[in-house]
Image (tube, rainbow, N blue to C red; front, side, top):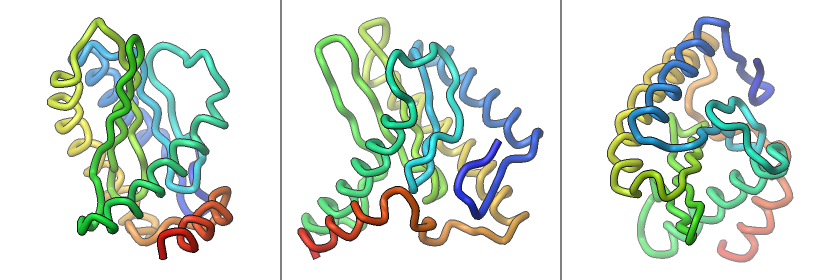
Length: 162
């Protein structure tokens, strides 16, 4: 399974990632976890299949995270490590993994934001280790993401907030 053009998963890496995400979903009682790379490519989905266009969702997620990086800088933060979008019925947590991938957790009223954040912190640490080992193996460390689908969006955000 491939993500950005500069790296890909081995079967073993993918199995580890799936196992971590499945355990997290069970422990947090969340519905679905998606991994999206910073260029907007969907990397993996675990749990209940989303009832929307996953490719479009991945692209918007990456743009959202990129925009929030700019907002963080405006308020004097280097970055926001996680974001929460809370709705009446559906909510989502977005968290940075290894500076290259975004974990998106979809959850509903069956759980609480506190539990998702608590369990999310632990799975982010586990996933970060997996991705760092993976990047070390291919020489694609957590440097700036490859320009891709978001090239135009990032340029526009830079113009607005630069």
